[in-house]
Picture 1 (cartoon, rainbow, N blue to C red):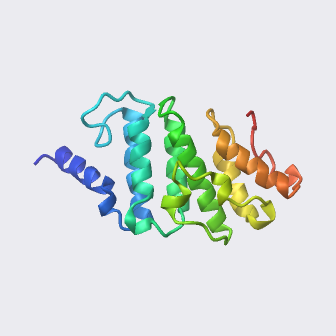
Picture 2 (picture 1 turned 180 degrees about the horizontal axis):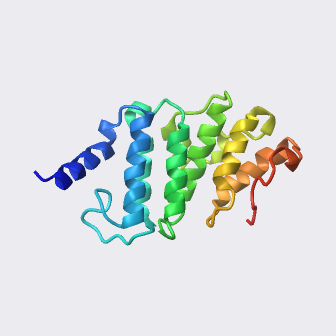
Picture 3 (picture 1 turned 90 degrees about the vertical axis):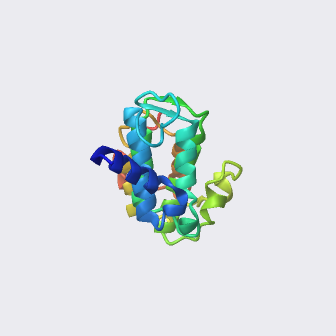
Length: 193
């Protein structure tokens, strides 16, 4: 087996939900999806036509399977996983997933933000499901979300060429609910919803 074949086999193994043992391995698997989105090649694109810088329904399904793997089902989404999702979002110039990834991104990021602020969050299969409304479990008040978490979120969203309307709406609701002066979060978002 050549070195490149061995590397591909390792990357395929990383992607299998049954092989995901923790949030770190889930974040690593998401970087494999990101690489496939960037190059249009790799284990996530095998057997199908995939253009570079494109995100399709199969890519979104890979992300959902990774994020809801049995080993991480009852753990909150980690910062590393959320950042990997932001990287996938940034890498995809073209979309053909009918908004599935945007919904998943918003829910995963809010899941992380809520848990990092000390709030209870539902299991991932509930929270990240396309059938579950984010408003049914997400915090609706900024006074319950840690300011450092909001600052991290702002840094992830600031200046992005592609905005996520669901996530922007949730953040605007949370920030607005607490009536925080935007001076507390300088240059938070370029909200152009």
